[in-house]
Image (cartoon, rainbow, N blue to C red):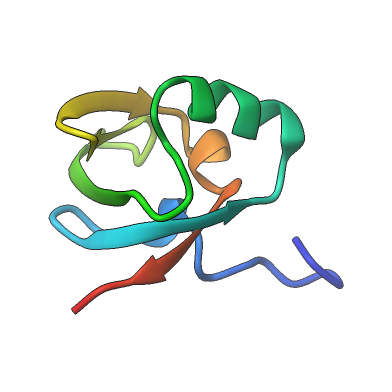
Length: 82
């Protein structure tokens, strides 16, 4: 959240099948974990699946599938692609 408003351009706001490019991270601890797993700024990601209650989500990045909690996904700032 920034100034009491939720950031809308995060991985947590993508729907199943949508693609985006990783722009930056809002949480240092989460960013280190994701960077180690190949989630680098500039990398294309796609939401492959979302659990029935919305958490966790499965994404593809750099050719492999990765599961993330919604709280982790909300720390990833993205640029949407068309």
